[in-house]
Length: 181
Image (cartoon, rainbow, N blue to C red; front, side):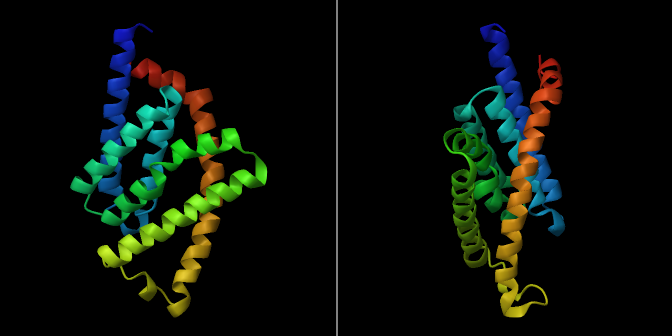
């Protein structure tokens, strides 16, 4: 691919990815049940940017979407979870897995996940006034339940994430490149 086509592909890929991320977070984020799904889905665009270009470009895309989402997406909880974890994790995941293996890799990923979730909880509960501790029938055990189920969900997310990225590389990548030529 020559330089002009490469720059055009990069610009169109970044613009479409950012626009789709904002649309997905705005529409899906308006449904309470999709508050966490929207940032997860948008994180895949970051992973695809890492694959197509590099981590630097993906990080710039992540920052752009985070700032724009803060301005235009009504569901600030979805934006917080995107900005603090699901947006940058696709960049970190490849970096962690390329330098560590097995249990060490999982420990690092879980530490990052839990730190991000604690910060997101503090921001959402203190700044956005979302009352997590009053949610549900579990009373004072609600936060513990949410934390535990979040860690189980992270395991499923990480495995599914790897499979979707693999599917992208082997099945969808050629169509994306053809579409954005």
